[in-house]
Image 1: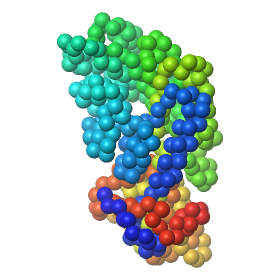
Image 2 (image 1 turned 90 degrees about the vertical axis):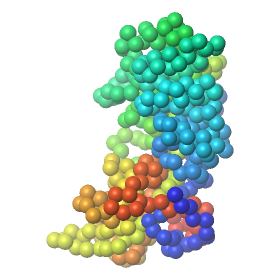
Image 3 (image 1 turned 120 degrees about the horizontal axis):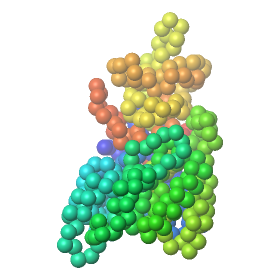
Length: 385
């Protein structure tokens, strides 16, 4: 991927182009980490690589002394290529890779196995070891959200749980790390529940580390915030809820806490600048076409309406914004009210999570250009929103 390093105005930038904000990314991590440590000191952050692979973000995680959370051999190799050592890596995921996961654990990193079958493969690999290897396992318990996750070992499966708890069944593997992660359970009380439940299992296993996963809300603009039915917590509120519950469970801070996150740190640290190539009216409805695709914008288009900041002059009007892909499904925003004009610019804001890392080359080359906001002469145009 290409990175521009020349000072330019927003209007001079080639489009489509991602505008990044490494400073905002870094500050999000620092804010959350420092407030969490005020509540519970024995904690580290695991940045979710799959959320956004942008190299300057990864290097910032490394500079801040935090960990890389990966879910595939490719992501592990990418993290190590950017300077993370194996002791800086949390290796999760369902891709069978018992040998490498075991190697990560042996060298000081964390390997959280998703299922018993893969753990049994690791058992055979450790036969004859002089010293046991400390590994982790992902647990699956009911979060009472109405959604049953497919990931992890079911804590209600007595046979599998008995095997995990039986040290004789895996004499050279010690289960000292416990992990969980849930989608769609983002409210504060649900994070407190994660901590309390994981603490109970930590005592059962004699674990020294619990990893409560992530899936916290990102730092959202009010227009995006209002699309959710629940109250969106701030990073500070998450830190207090998680840290205070952890302190309640382990007052001596003897168990290390890991909180994973991608979305809360990167959401507001990347935007996409795109140019309007056509404005037309068909049977009374206005259609706007831009030079990016919804694949470039990412999952924001799949689940919500992205926040659009118009850099065009003129009267406001109601439009549907389409991408440049030759399909009817390349919709970026179904209903947008604001000024539009052929050749004008639109800034699709706060799309840092699951965007640039998902780019493909279907029909046309995906967006691969980046520029950091700090390099723009008139960066106040972006900050003014």
